[in-house]
Amino acid sequence: MELPKYNGNIHPEEWLKQVQTHCYLKGIENETQILKICKLVIDSTIIIPKEINSFDELIKSLKSHTTFTIFKNSCKRKLQLMKYNPEKEENYTASFLANFRSLCNYAEINDPDELKTLLINSYSNDFFKIEFAKRVDNIDLKESPYYIDEIVKLFNEVVLDELKIIKYDTLIALKHVTTGRYLSSCDINYQTGSRRNIVFAGEKFYNSHSIWLLTKIKSHKLNQQNMVFYNDEFHFRHKETNNLFWLSYSYKSPTTGQSEAFCNYETYDVCWQIINLESKNRTHNDNNTLYVNSKDIIKLKIIGDGQDLYLRSHDFTFTINDETFQEVVGHEDRIGANDEWCIELIE
Image 1 (tube, rainbow, N blue to C red):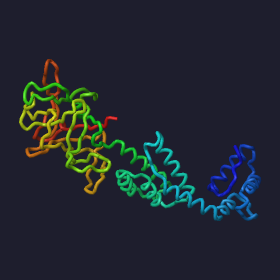
Image 2 (cartoon, rainbow, N blue to C red):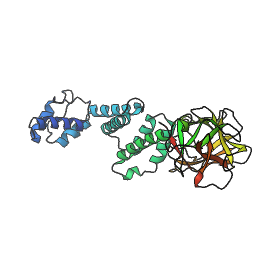
Image 3 (cartoon, rainbow, N blue to C red):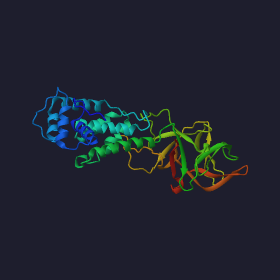
Image 4 (cartoon, rainbow, N blue to C red):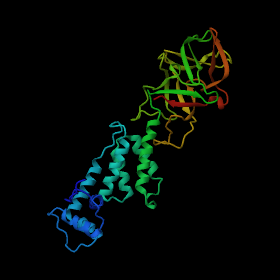
C-alpha cells in the first residue's frame, strides 16, 4: 500500500484514515509520529500552520484551506450530474447508492431536503419521482440521526416496487384465489353457446394456456410508464392464440347457465376494468387512483352498454371430448370470494 499524499482532491478525514491505515500496517501507532508523516505528505502548495499538534487540528486546518471548498463544490457538482440507470449493470442500484453516499459525505451535505432533491433529480422516471417524493414526506428525517440511511433505503424500495408494477403489453397470469387455478384458454371450442374458444380455470401452475396481456384501448392515452391503474379500461388478449377474451351477453356457460366466457379474434364495444384491488395505499396520479401491482388480489368486470359482468370461477366443471375443464363465467350477482383473482407478472 502506497503512502497517500494530500493535494486537495480527497476529503481530509478520508485521507487521514488512509494514512493511519498505512502506518498501522507498518507498525507505526504513535499519534505524534503519524502526525509528522501526515505533514510530510501534504502538497507543498497547501500551506498549514506549523503549530498543529493533533489530528483534530490538522483536519480543521485542511478544511479551512481553499482547496477543501473547491473539493466540496466539485463533489456537489458530481451529485447534481449523477443519473440512475437501472439497466446499466446487474448491481447498479448498490453501486449508485454507494457512490451517492460517498459524495454526500465528501460534500458534507447535511440537509435531508437537499439529499431528497438530489435523488429525485437522479432518475428520470415519473413513477419514481412521484412515489419517492410522496413516501419520503412521510418520514420525519430531521428527527433521525441516520436520515441518509432512511433516504437511500426508501430509494431502493421505490425502485424495486416499480419492477412489480403491472404494465400494458407485459405478460401476466391470473390465479383464481379460491381454487388456486389459473385463468386459461386454448384452441378448443365450446360445443354449445357461441362455439368459440373456451376459457377455463386450468392448472395450479401457469403454462402456455394461462398467459395473457392487458392491452390499452387505443382511444385512451397511455401514461409515460405504461402502468395499469384501477379503473383503467382495457382489452384482455390471450398470448398463445392471440385472441381477445370476452364475457357474453347472449350465450350461456355450459354448466351453470351464466354468462359464457370465451375468446375470439373479434373486437366488441365493451372493455375490461379492474376493481376493488387489495393494495398498500399505493397512489400515482392526481385522483389517488391505485396502480396495479403483481400479487394484488383483484376483481374484474366487463363494462359496456349492458349490465356490468363480473369474472368468476367455481368448482363446477364441463366436459369436451372426455376432457374436464373448470368453468369460468360472467355474472351480475352479488360479489363474493369466487370473484377474486391474484394477478401475477410473468418475468
